[in-house]
Image (cartoon, rainbow, N blue to C red; front, side, top):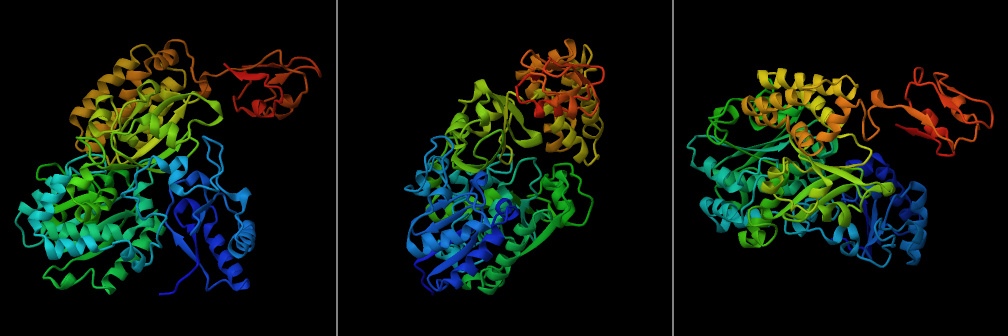
Length: 598
């Protein structure tokens, strides 16, 4: 093994790759060779570090110096100053949003974004080269599989997962061990284990990042699951829009086969297991387990009636256990460390940790993993760094199109499956979108319902027709054409759809509407009765007004595409609301803050 005095870890996740991290790696390698340091310093492409807002991210070890927003032109300075002379480059070091402190003397665990997190599923992301199986093995990789195959019976593996209390991280929260037990108890000549990596929620990127940063963990977990239920084949269903994740997963599968960790007689036992990747075309409904299985089989991605459940009759009519990526990422650690270790984290009814994709109106966008039971306020302010530009928090949307909007006065609720459902939202797969005072909650509900209508498979009438009728009402409301009785119509339609839709996606589609009606009903009423958008967001309900702050500079009149602004030089201007297109060009140009939305 080659030894190096320093390692340069460069984020190779999708976010940083799109910001040019691949070019950073090329430049680092070129500069190290020019300086004669190629045998002293190793450059490693990792998965996502989590703090996407600071990308592209570069971390130099052994010091652990965290460089953020690194550009190609910064590489030469890092090499010549830090790697050659031992002097950290101060102006590139990450500065904490909340404290405004530089992290130059801090380890990653001391930085505000990381210090309250507990990384279990994400333990290797940003730490190892995901395309190097030796690095995964060095971090106890495949040790859990060896333990399961050589020291535990199938029943003991399943019981360990049951005792851990691990619940499905894909959104349903069903006890994982019980699902495995159902699969184990279903007699068949062939069984399958499958992984749902069809991450379709707007704003969600947890599963993608796990596959990009630690693909071997998913392979190991699926092999353990295969052993537990008696399956010899596994399928990973991943959307084709995740090319980096797909490539790294295939590399990992090939490496595992080469090392004898997939294939025949693994670890010298009579257990054989192989894996396949199936690409999805990006249909949201294929995140539903039975629709996913139809798609793997080459059929139209539509849900099947249940029962029978997949654990009895799934892929190709055989017993199948399906879990999502994050659920599998926890399995090796539970087998290695034991159920009691896992239950020591989190809440009584929701043990362990949960990964969230934190986005929207938040300073620290990125991946967050916290113990279940953590207050929502801690995630938003202590980890997320609060709301940009001094704005007020209005709501947090969790669970994607199947979830709901949590108002600011509920921020102290603990993040658990049951508590989120009680207030009209849900855990979902882990999307967490933050909204501030400028967000219109009626339009937010319209946005998510528009997504659901577009993605509906159309198999059942409540989802195909009912959600479209709801969307039509919401579109009328945001266009200023809402009528008395619209709110009641929305509630009736929503409750009927929840009660009668075929699959879980259809049944939960009305949740964003119901939760916003519950907590922000006044905004609906303002849109309908007063033809006013309290957030000044809905274009059809806006009027642009010029105040006495106007200095008559004429810039607004010059940029107005409709010639709706008039006034003499050095005199207050006026907007003709009958001509105004409400494009906002005048607000952007005004240097005196004289133009406002009303």
